[in-house]
Length: 480
Image (cartoon, rainbow, N blue to C red):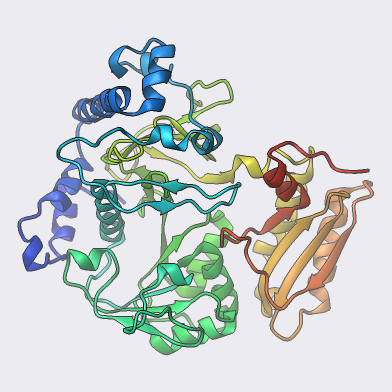
């Protein structure tokens, strides 16, 4: 299904700006930017990039030194060949030189914002300085994705998140388990627009309690981590679809195609998912018409490159490299996100001309330490669980596959009541076929909960080697 500039303008009219923002044109400008001609889009990006590069060369110590070393005069890099001479920026380089990325002063028309912390998934947490403009871009992109999915701003928005991402109670304290926090407007977009109420529930509540809470509150929109959406969907799979639910918002973690389909089937609603980084902001959001990510190119530039640093070919996967265009407080140029994604060919069938890319496939650093064949085994088993028929997964609530340094595996599950013997027979049969004659064992264990790692992100696959690599910063080989 294709959309158009006129269609999106009509959809934007459903959103009524609050009186103090009645003069604001930024949201309308975002609508128009979605359908720019290629030449106009390129010129706008070059102008913003040139301004950022000149600023970085003159005000940011790290880039002043780097640009002199690679002979990038005054930071000028209008042509692709010049821009690609800037080496990709790693998180380790930022950690080792953090102060050198902070400018000596900001441009006269730029105001400093509050810092954000990275998750620490792949190592030490990092405090990122931001400007008010980069924060506002986060708000703009959030509303854009809700418009794409045709949210009714007067609906009830629910969220199950970790406490720092939930509103506080009237006395300023965080909401405890078992309690609902209620506010009169939606977070972020409710600052600008007239909206319905929002409710929140802590994700430390048991999965069954989360499911009961949703059925009791009957919201129209539900936002949570991708893993929480899946866990709650498993708890609700034998229940009728929630007729009140219009759309879901997945955050924090990637979704496979099959997990997405199961969640959407259970809730009877489509999932909007974004790709963002605290280092940059919201980078891209899912296209509801075509099933790909559209880049918010007002905020950043995205490249997908191969191991040699060249643009990846259509149909292949490559490293996601992002350059900020709005954050002058700590500019990251050609930042290597550590993630990989698929390169797509041609314009998006939806009609928007924003740049786009395909599925994100997770963190590269989570694959690099593994011996050959381990990830293929993990994918086979996890894919089998994703596709389980309802009669085998009815009591399954959470699952996680762990790889030991010895080379063996353990499937950890959280269940309601118990799993049928046919569940284990089915998994064992798939496993035997996958390992063939290799002496790799799979054991099962049951847990009350599968707590996420300190970053608060849930992973369906974990390994002793990930933690060893995270601690040491070096590749770790498995023992015999």
